[in-house]
Image 1 (cartoon, rainbow, N blue to C red):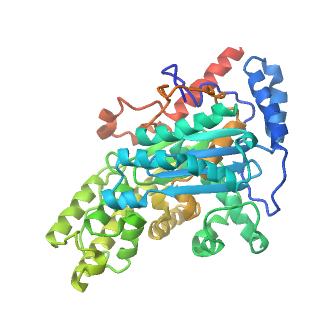
Image 2: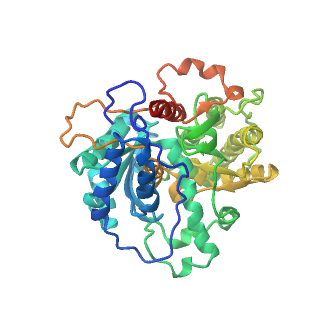
Image 3: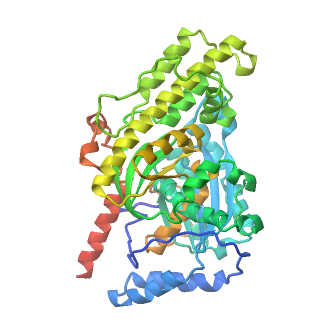
Length: 509
């Protein structure tokens, strides 16, 4: 997005609140519909443009077009960190395609994400990834209704590649553009996957080989029956709900009250849990091509989780914030004390050294996840005080793929009378599907920007939000340790939307 003004810039500077209910995405067990997208899109965009200069009396007409027309098709682009991803979804709830280009080799080579190298890797494959997503969906850019792209939070160098590509596609084909918050996308993807699991309840999956083209085998959807059972308790995930977002760069506990309306109950004051997993894997000499989290989780199964006495972080703090920097230091010191040489691969280590590494991995994982459990338990108590109707805790982000994390958090939510909701592992890590879903939901509410210029200059100033809070900070959850880090932080998504709603209301008077 090209930001001309410092306040209320895209994607929500032009809110057109046409209807309140957000969509509930479902996966239909039918053959792919042959829709006349070319006939639909011009009608939609003409109506959106007209709304900018029309009175409130035309809102009903807009509602009819947006609410009843189910032929919306959105391309989602994600480049916030180390994966280049694109996907196409439609408003019937069908994932028409999903493509992800991993940077696993770079992660292994540099022992983590190297921003400049990640940027270059994105630039090399972004055109191919987007084109493949369109090809797999059997569509062209002319068939799209809108383009959604992650604009933050994330690494500026990486975000820039995705935003430039999205603006190029949107500008060249006169398409509206939706800027997406990365963490909101992780939160909302669970709302789409719930309905997909309903198909299993009705016995439809065995006969279904239709529009869902996730790049995973069908058997993968069954390999965690306990998690699927948790998904199937409730057919729809309704607002309000709790969410824990855990990844390499983020730890976030939020209360989701509505689409675009979030209360931040807790976040990390230094490092995220995914970063701690990655560094532990690196120091233990594990294979980082599968990423640090899965490598540590696998090795931990061989170890004694109570053999190394790590301290649980922030025990004295009665809030919902996280800290993993100290635990990382404890792990590093334990590895040094055991004289473990990370240059020696796990496969080449002696039996004694392998056991030492496994014990450290297991002990680290137990304490790292115990930290999550304690903070989640308190956050649920806070959330229920604010919104007593909460029934679910959504856990998403790359670390949510970890079976141990899911199992331990399932115990927490059961004690609190809630249900755990996790997306399939393929949708926990960064992907284009979550961006497209979120873009589509906001698009249906009229939250989008008009097409950018067709021939935008290379030096155009883009609206990138590397530090972009999702919600307003809960008073009891504020951390003095984070107060010095807010100077360069963008206003939260929730505050921007509320300000825009207020502005719209005042202009309508």
